[in-house]
Length: 247
Image: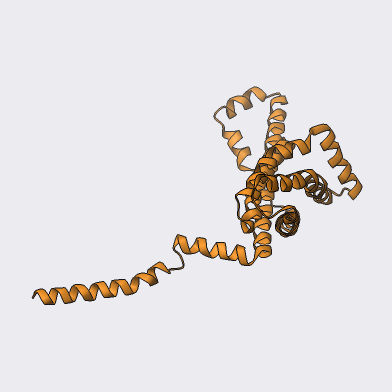
């Protein structure tokens, strides 16, 4: 009887040990998902950069559009309420709306219509420039100044990125895209950029965010994740900046 139990136990253990590798290799385990993502970005840097930044650009633009839409709706709501107050029977209207019925009605009228042509521009801008172009700049051009992660190498890369690439290429490109959306000429777009640099300290605001970010980018973040890391930071930066500029 004891020998029979031992034989059954051994058989169960053999079956379990033979099935364990297949369980570990399940494609939906977190470790395998992370490994797949890591391999994709390492083997397809430009595709990964385009995919990440085009999605980021579209998402950030939609958030910005939604914020602007809500702001316009609130302004329209305030205008309607002002018209009601100016009406001879505004006192009666106030009493009727004290419970929020009219405000709720006006609030319910808000409809968010996506400007797909604008979103397409940001998809292309995000994917082609912030994605593929910055992948080339970060991992093909800037290594000219060193391939290590020591302080001197990182400082050189950050200095070139913040002192040359950002103020002369990166930010002006965003103004050119914005100018294209609203019908400005190339010269008008650059003039608006220069005006914001001189009068609003635009470059200094950019440096206050991205100097420390780029120090982390070039010292800690693996090469194949650098563009994606910067994309995450710039996503929130674009939303904050859009809210400030449209406020």
